[in-house]
Amino acid sequence: MSISQPNTLLPVPSGPLQIPPLAPAPTGTDERPLRFSLVIPTYKESQNIPQIVERLTQLLDSVIPNEYELIVVDDDSPDLTWKVAQELIPQYPQLQVMRREGERGLSSAVIRGWQVARGEVLGVIDADLQHPPQTLLQLWSEIQRGADLAAASRHVEGGGVSDWSPIRRFLSRGAQTLGLIILPGVVGRVSDPMSGYFLVRREAIAGKTMNPVGYKILIEVIGRGNIRWIGEVGYVFQERQEGESKVTWKQYVEYIGHLVRLRFARWPVARFFRFGAVGFSGVFVDMAIFYLLSDPSTLGWGLTRSKIIASELAIVNNFLWNDLWTFGDISSKQRGLRKRVKRFVKFNIICLAGLVLNVLLLNLLYNVLGLNRYVANLIAIAAVTFWNFWINLKLSWRVTEVKD
Image 1 (cartoon, rainbow, N blue to C red):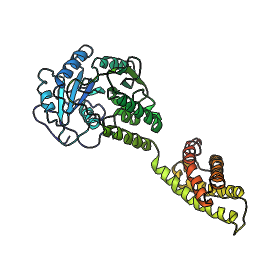
Image 2 (cartoon, rainbow, N blue to C red):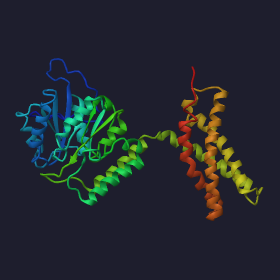
Image 3 (tube, rainbow, N blue to C red):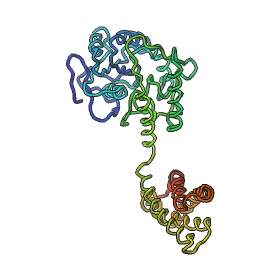
């Protein structure tokens, strides 16, 4: 903790956005682990904070009295939301308040709140009452049934929006569709990936370094956490009663950037670049042999025959370098000629499948569209690079059994 706040304010964590495991209470203190910690991120919500705290307290007192805490994390609101919340503490002893003066953003506010939380289960809810507090009990029930994450959704039974314009509905659905295209393995796990109302078990995200963007943290939690079982609960998104909306075009742009970043985070980027460097060396082998065999000034062989021979020699070159460098950490544990031959056969079959596509593209670009033969060849090579890397990663250097 780097900043201490007087008058009952929580200290503000610094450093990486990483959730710690639930630690035992320090000896001689009355701090103890709780069952549930709910973070309420705020900015200019002074009009709403008394009501949301009152309603949440009534609900949680009915199911887990004295076993929860509410944590308001305010980004130094000009309307003094943090102070309004602080003044509620004598009336609501389970309430805690954090005032952030040097850091901004809803998602990072949530994680900073989770970092100081004492709950086994962590949650987030908006302060503006657009997330109906009563849905919290249904989310809690999903966690009690064994879910690692319970998310409130507008797109399951019982869900919806109260009074959205057609444009906003279109943008919301468009953002979800885009997410399914860019990051289907994450976005496709929930019906409402842009929900900001959910609970998650601490153990599912403890030790994970988060890097959220903008207002949407759920996809970050699903993408980086160990989330097995997800429960969803329908809710109707309410219109804001007090204060001003914070939804802007910038939030949609940040959402798209976040999807792209998570997409690349799930790829073995360093290995892919090594694979690409090896493939680049194969381009020179391919182009050189292709020139010697097909150019009218040399042997003048047919286009397809020349391409097949050139590509096979490039495959041999690429396999040797990939086995030594790109996947060297794996192949070093699979020693022996037999295993190397097995890897080469798999590599060759996969690359030959790519070669079929390569040849088809080359003939299309050169014979049909009339591109220069060398430009057409480069385009065809680029088109199958991702295919070759991904399938080889999944098959050639992964499924070979290792027996020590």
